[in-house]
Length: 514
Image (tube, rainbow, N blue to C red; front, side):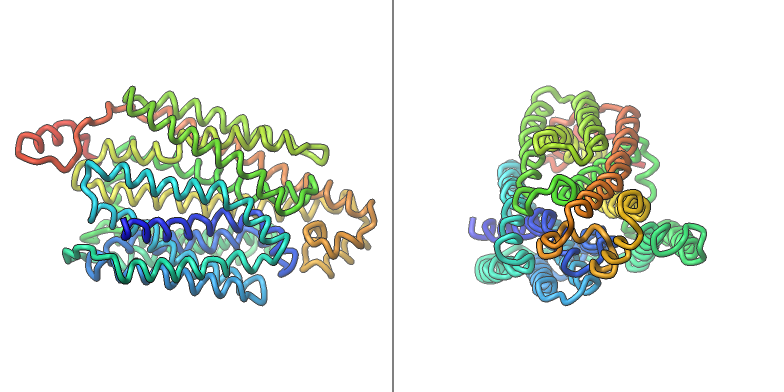
């Protein structure tokens, strides 16, 4: 239990990192500048986590779980300290990248350590407790993040991680005694490097396109071209690597392919709501940072409720496809509501949309992992699971880049419809290059004429409309992909079976990927 307490602390601090910061992001960009590059703050952490996660498990097999887990905590703490001390926007983006690298070790290794020290029969109970720590972070995080930002400073959102990180290190150092069965692994270094660079080039081109540079500029076209070359190299490397980071044979299974496409779309939708709704609630509706954080709570609470109830329903019936389709339809309705919001939208209308999105998310987030695991052969279980998590991370990062680009492009034209050119020039010179930052900074907002404030809120509402509207086709793609998923009966035996007969039974029920 002491070891498990350390794992829960690590999981809690990593989960809080996402939910604490989301409502504070508009305030952060108002102080540091960079609303046009708003999405880079969450993207940098996700990109780093995406890079690290695939190799974290294999490194821990070679060097041991305990030192790698402690390394992740230390890296995360360093990133938190740097984030809290950030003197400028791009330094904060770098510090968040460091934080994300730490998270890339913490999250997968906590699951691996549970597998090392807890029997399969008892494992579900403990993984449920780990899920509860995410639930606590989901409920407490947004409200606490808003409260800390409004009453202290956003920098404390990062500094509060440090004492929890120190406590976690002490518990792990003294009490974690994990059996370390060293296994030889051929780490796919070049596969990881080419995939990471390809993702980074794609994200950079997407965020820059139509904002810093025209879409047909050599900078944007060049980055997309480099990404294509790197992806081609990645495919060649994966075909030859003894232990590829993303085995291409898995994609021969239509079930694996459609489940990953749908899961990536759901991740895009989830993070789009978490990180862009506070912009609307604070910038358009005019709520305080604390209230904007509180408005995220109904979505996350609904997600937890349907996740628990949906899991129970799947266990009782063995069916999951209809539940997934219903959840995606409800989530699509929530995003459609978001796309209709304007300057007259009330908090109650926002909460209704949030609850709908949360209900859909709860039925789908973990179910796609279950689908992949249920269809995977025993030898592919671990790699298929990690590949699904990788697809989700990539989807979230790319989705944030696309939505952030839509917001940046929309602001350029929408503000001009409501504000004279002279006012725009003055606001841009005092607001870090982005007109809308004035409504997120109380010191600037207090000096704005009412007509200018109203114009900014109108312009921001117009700019956010295509951001939320984009969520509808993304969810529609997930819905169509789910329609093509062949519903297999859920196995009633674990892969790890004692005896030749049980092993044969498990093998007979498998539908091996590839």
